[in-house]
Picture 1 (spheres, rainbow, N blue to C red):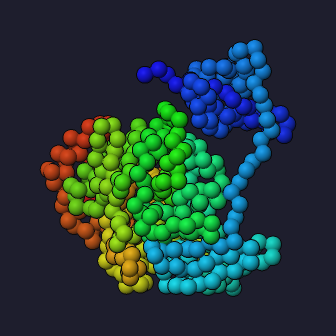
Picture 2 (cartoon, rainbow, N blue to C red):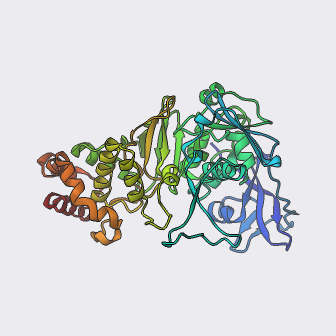
Picture 3 (cartoon, rainbow, N blue to C red):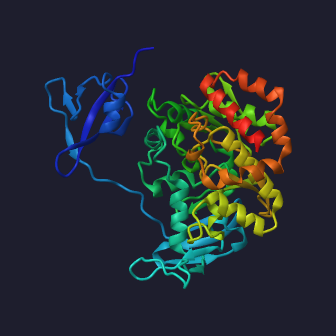
Length: 452
């Protein structure tokens, strides 16, 4: 099959005349065109353009005919009069940004991140107000347009992920939240929430049936390569959850499976094997043909909320300590949810064991019933791209967890017994994805836990 020709059709320049990107065409006779930033062209098309050279400063014609230039006018999706926050088929509220007004229909279905909780009070200059003891004063929070906007932006903002900019190009949404929202309805695989713009006519069943079925998007998200011109005809026919999946490493979703392809994505599989060996709930992950397949633990009936979504119920950042793990542990203890407390303890033990230096409040969460909203359990441990660091220095981990480890391991003697078992040592030894140094570090941590 002949290599696809890539031509520069138009160079985009800013108001100062500096190049910022170009419109590239793919195909022998000026096929579909795609707008791509200059940085992306320099990284991916240095030797692939047929009518231009790629230099560190920009694009230069190699035909003797100057490349056409045009000033870039950034087009953004226009906000609409109404957003409707949905939970499956249920209307939760209608948001009217222009009127700074929210009309609540079924407040009991609000996401945990938007329900109740407390906010810190500030004066007109942005300084926190303190009580007589020097603690920050708080007031009960309520749903507002600005709070909804923050939630929606946070839900759909993942530009920091490697190759995600390429997915944005393929989906023709640029970096504009309104276009992303029109394209995806903010649908996610972790829950049943979505947002309907007043200019979009769709249903929950349509979104579900067309979700994450585009293999072209999968390939771009994992490799960053647009091997063939994106099939823009499919954009209107499918919906992707990828905009609402967080993280910095390349990942994709296809028909209910989370796919990862990275130099250390195999750590997900290693963590699963170790968790299985000592009886701790870890997301199922297996290596298949160079891709790590991570089994989703959510469904239409079981949803997940990130730990961050519960912090506004706690004293986190309220002047009483800023450790999210301590804040959530204390909160569930006060609620009498000692089943959740016990599961958190096992989660803490495991993340210490595998040296996960990325164990923050978006990398663990809680499963809840999608109908009753009752919290059922801590979600299986997941996201180990930055685990097995091999530092061996306990000071690099969360101080509160380290101080509580003796209590945690005493509360879970079954884990302690498994760490001492020949089965655990055998599985650790067999993990080909880990270096000997990493295995030695885990073994030393296991021995330390068993001495506590």
